[in-house]
Amino acid sequence: MKIEILKNVLEVNDNLANDIREKSDKSKTLVLNMMSSPGSGKTSILEKLLPKLLFNGIKTGIIEGDITTTRDADRIIGNEIPVVQINTEKFGGDCHLGSEVVKPALDQLHYEKLDLVIIENVGNLVCPAEFDTGADKNIVVISVTEGEDKPLKYPLMFRVCELSVINKVDLLPFLNFDMEQLTANIRQINPNMEIIKISAQTDENVDALLKWIQNNLKN
Image 1 (cartoon, rainbow, N blue to C red):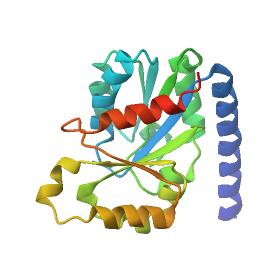
Image 2 (image 1 turned 120 degrees about the vertical axis):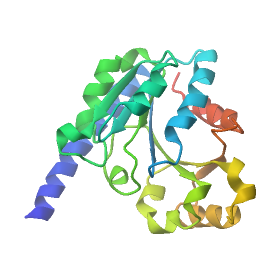
Image 3 (image 1 turned 90 degrees about the horizontal axis):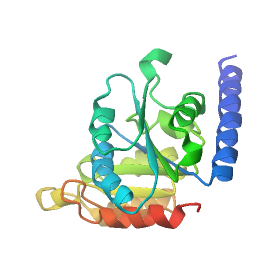
Image 4 (image 1 turned 120 degrees about the horizontal axis):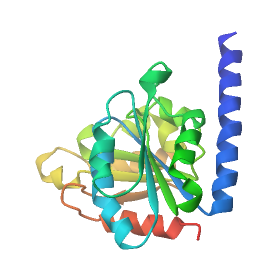
């Protein structure tokens, strides 16, 4: 019975996600779903990235997903970019965003008038990978402080993503960390994964992420 209920939930979610993609294709809006464990630096990356998007004339909206608080959204609002906050506490404290909560947030952003929407999903390497948000592409952020084994421990996350952003590379001189091992583990799970290494703290190589987004815009 539980398996059948879960199947029905996922089918409804997937159908709505496909509807989101159809509409974003018509409006030529790129929707990105950014996922990670808590503390990997998703919001810090956005803080560095959003001024670059504005400077390049890319009309952008942000959906912030958290169980509680508006802390991340409050940090983003200062970038003069429209933000919609989703608190999953209202929906039982879900550890992910599904298409049923993303769709109203997209409508609130009037996403058909935007070039780009970035969904900052709830910090978790398990649940968000299981639910289609309707995004065109999925991004996983992993920081060097998390260790090299995360792709092997959470393979579904790395299978469903097209891009892996490795953050906090400015800390490498202070860590016993094997970057080659991490990239090898990523490739073991997803041989086609694109990888960008950045530091949101120092702005190192954030322009590479900007370029990746520009290359994937629909207009």
